[in-house]
Image (cartoon, rainbow, N blue to C red; front, side, top):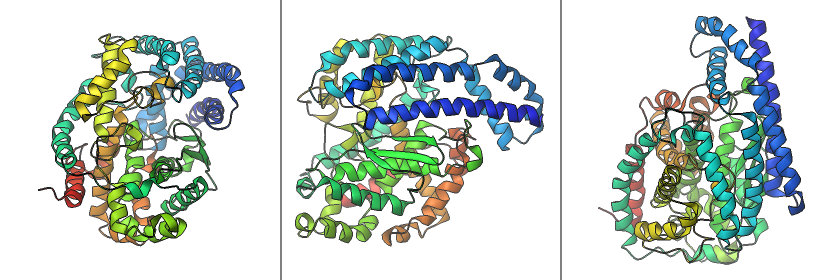
Length: 502
């Protein structure tokens, strides 16, 4: 059986290598590729997508999985071998329901759509990208319908990103969370807003990016296995466990843009760099779900990166870097500025209290689009109406409205956004459990030391990769299923102090 297992592993590594090559092309398209390369790049990514899908759905892999079933049953559930067979079977049984031709079509389309979006957003031209988005919706529905018998058409699209959750589960969690968040947001936004003018002076890009990388390295990001580049919409990508890259974007009149983008993507990268190296090239060598992955980006960006203890250590360094801009600003003023709560337009720039309302809007729109209750042409007006109802402000244009996120323009509609809010919830739950094991972590952070926290996360989450499902990881790491309570307690404590809430 060992020979059969090794044959399966070798085949999976071949599929991974093709997908990694496609990942390099995507990274290049999002960073350095000249616009003239767009047409050929769409064809190239489609070819690689088709080849990877054909290799993974080859009947030989199915036969190997059948042959290895007795071997899997003879192993401990938690063994690496049993876990790889189990995960591969789950992915294989899903993949064989999707034709390779469809995968190639989607890859071609999304590559073209992304290139159009990069021009349409700065031009505030929704009509330019609307036909592509309509086609994306068609592909999304078609993909879902490869899996008949679903409770909701979004379920098959949520499943690969957050396995074990359906649209009804997400809606239930969001409804529960919304009841808690809205009163907190209302109590804070009814007060005079915090002064964040110190963040909107002139901050040269090079110094911003350099400081962000100082923080990333302190968090534990290994630059021997990573690098950072600029892009339109920041992301982390991995080509191997030895090549995990992050991207960021900057605005010279907004100090927080590049800094917190870098922290966010570093959190993703720490997860991938922390995976057991023995999993290299196999389906085990990646984060287990969108929600768990986002928990790491949000934990390092917000719970650590926006904490008072963190800035007690790093603010003097930031002041030295930007002495003209920040010497007159105290650490307390700066801390309050980076934690300003306001009803804002842009999801990626939203504060911790209102951020999830942005996600809920998008999730609800995905359901409505997939159900046919909303048409693509109605998105801009629906966006403005819902935004006014939820935030009390109206987006002045589509650039900062329906065009702001890349997800629908470089992927399918459905399952795109729920992971962000699940990640916020899980970030607090994981951090709370880390503190229970290591109460000294806040003191370490104030000294600029992150190894204890990083080690706890690596031992309890990172090293396992996709060996366990998200519910299994959560239970193993915290002893409990996912709960919003630690997150609500975190928000009430932190913002209760900042805004003198009862």
